[in-house]
Length: 396
Image (tube, rainbow, N blue to C red):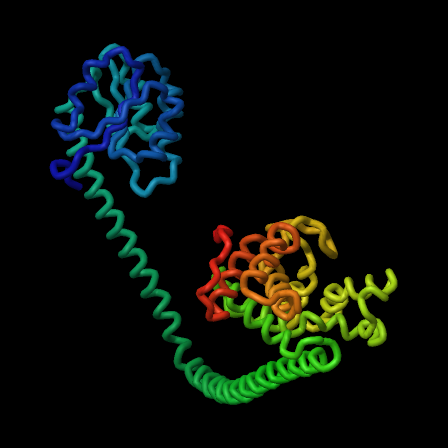
């Protein structure tokens, strides 16, 4: 333990009656001083700022109080136990000092203590502590070595008889491990093949549904593919992950699956001839389409996107009347892509300018204005025309 190279971290506990003495414990003198005027708070200071040395001014404290304070210091769980010096005035009896030493104090100093006395006592304490620790470590090491030696002698007597049994057991275990490894490889290979086939079957099932929708429901061939392309473009602007992009692609291709559950006669009717019940059947197709995928966990994300695609930005949509940001992002994107492709095929939309006007009319009501802004940018980028300007809708 060296005290000359580093500052001595000193916790000085006193009643504030002799402040002049603290000036001796400066950094120049080699101390890092922590002052404490309340002994009751000394324990928390020791835990938060563990010192090298604690000096307790005994003035005004009873023997029992001093012993209790020292006992608290000794009970703390610290990586390094600080030295505890107690400053006694000459008037205090030596019997009390001896009692405090027996109860854990490392040194008793005659008050008022000064910097040079504390430094010298701490140097001596450090050397004694170092020797004690070395001696204690050597005794522990010796005791441990003797214990190991005795144990080794006992074990050596039985090792010859158990070695052969352990070798046989080990050979048997290695044989089992080899068999288990071979079996594990076989099972892993089968699982990989099952996962591949399952993925193929799911893709095939989705493809069958998409073809069925295109054949029986879509009024415009390729609507699902175009919606998927538009939705993919917008989703990438929001840094959507690959798994969610795949869910969005499936949802775009299959978003009209609920219409397969609507009677063909209803779908064939002109809109102005539909009854209220028949109109409600058609309006409910996203919800019915989402329910169609219940029980197939691979389509959970896709179903959730479809379920909310007819929620409106102003809260007037179905099925829950969600508003703005409370509508899932992917559902807002799918709704925008579906509206965009439907408008493009509307006979009344004959130019990019007309398309922009129609899109703008949906912003804030049917569609999220941010999604509309990206749809306008998509329209300009994919029409190849520079003759029209995008309306000023902020993109955030």
